[in-house]
Length: 291
Image (tube, rainbow, N blue to C red):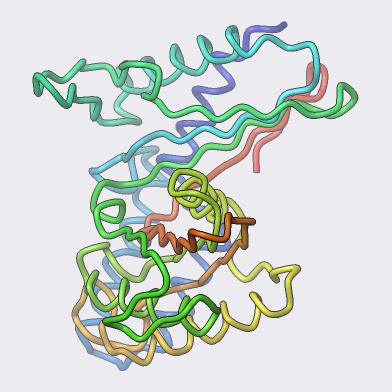
């Protein structure tokens, strides 16, 4: 297979320095919706100026460049081992060029590798094989530590919140997660929610939902309605940008339903900060495109 290290490096640069158009548009709408001169509008103004500067200077949007999460959909016959090496090499080079901050710290010793290398789980790479006639796609999400820290997982039923094993119970625990997060997740955020699965699959799916664009309609009509309801209700909490108060606490809500065993009912909430950094590259023959 061809060497895509330089192309993956470009994917990292774009993800780290250039906020996607759908996210920026939603932030600009939020700015106009907030009261003139309010702390909420001031926070959004600072965010938007930062977005412009990062793009023009090709510098990271946020000082926390986050955990690199790669989702690789590869056609039959390609070597995942070779793709992984190219990704790791690109991440290391991106760190040298300051597109990424050296974030990889050994949890036992506290030592920083200095180049974002690590064990088999850093950077995090998920592989899925697709039909051989389909192109190779690599999606990247950079998830900051602050928003990762306010993620949550609930087990239903939850007696304290009177939350049962249904979508009404899901609604209650999601509202609880956002209320507890306040501004610590660098609001306005985006919620990725998974209902069902085991503990691991549930968290994984909650992050996968964040790969879709803001405003994308959920193919499940019931979940789509709950997404809209949650976004509306959360924005009525008054937490606002950075916790300063205001009308915009979340930009969007995304939910995915999973199958589960009868004994378990998990709800996982992955919180993404306003620096909603995600990009995709597609490789079709010698052609490489970015989205």
